[in-house]
Image 1 (cartoon, rainbow, N blue to C red):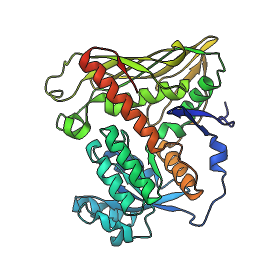
Image 2: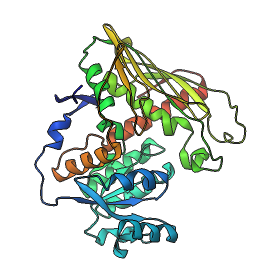
Image 3: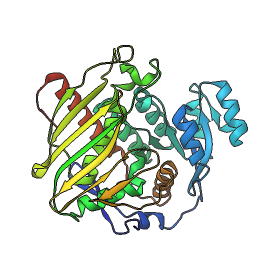
Image 4: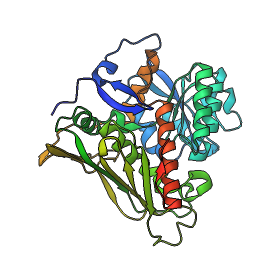
Amino acid sequence: MPEPTTPFVLSKIGGSALIFSPNTLLSATRQKKEKLGVALVGLGYYSTDLLAPALQQTKNCYLAGIVTGTPEKAEAWKQKYNIPDKNIYNYETFDSIKDNPDIDIVYVVLPNSMHAEYTIRAAKAGKHVICEKPMALTVEDCDKMIAACKQAGKSLSIGYRLHFEPYNLEMVRLGTKKIYGDIKKITAGFGFLIGDPTQWRLKKAMAGGGPMQDLGIYCVQGICYTTGNEPIAVTAQEGPKTIADKFSEVEQSLKWQFEMPGGIIAEGEASYGHALNFLKAEAGKGTFELSPAFNYGGMKGKIGESPMNFQNVNQQAKQMDGIALSIQNKQTSIVPGELGKRDVKIVAAIYEAMGTGKKTTIK
């Protein structure tokens, strides 16, 4: 099965559709700087095991610098990736990155509570920004991040890798093009059994919440980009806490139900207590689904009982290349800050509904 080649609606933000054709974007004319330099801020698992290796495969950007508070990590990365001393920063020297022409993009890969601060500081330093999801802990912080990047004349993108992944793009095409008619029901779930009980993802002040922030946001995205619609209202229920030593501050699991335009039934689930990984649409003339849907690799999908046959890609490399190319060609990112803000707003409504036990309108 070939990759989709015709433009389609990827998602809607406040009623405005984002149109994206992967082939069109990737074939756009290159301008001036052949490769944009990326500085990774925060050298945890995602940077170390996924982003840095992906940046060895990218065509439009490369690993130019790092920001870390751990001298041992700085030295190890310097040796492994041949990073010059002038491109290595800590959190105290971060703002001086403004004087470094090697670095075009700052990729914020820090705990959720730090996203807003470092996005704003990067923008003030005159750098384009990629910020990991969730964009921030509050809609107000999202607004400040968007405003800072606009004031600086710099691009702001959110690290939504699945917008560049062929199996999820096929779900978008099938759903928004109504290949099998109108979607009647869509369900999504993402979960795993979380490990280290001391990690920041289980600290409310740093994470903002539990699996909803980390995993549920993928389900929110999947529901929105497959249907091409945004939820109007939500009800939600917290699951039981069966692992006492890990969930004193955040939820272990939750389920939610969206009220969608056109009467579409939409349900999601996120969990740190058990494994689940799927996105399924039931339309008038057939079904299409992914399982697993949200992994870093090894995606599988089917239409009815027929398998989807796409090549698995390095999602992080595709994402960073796509964002870098949009910057080079002065195009709007397909994963802009406004999209991140929308999802923060939806997640906040889910938490409100879970806390009150009542339906919450998503304004």
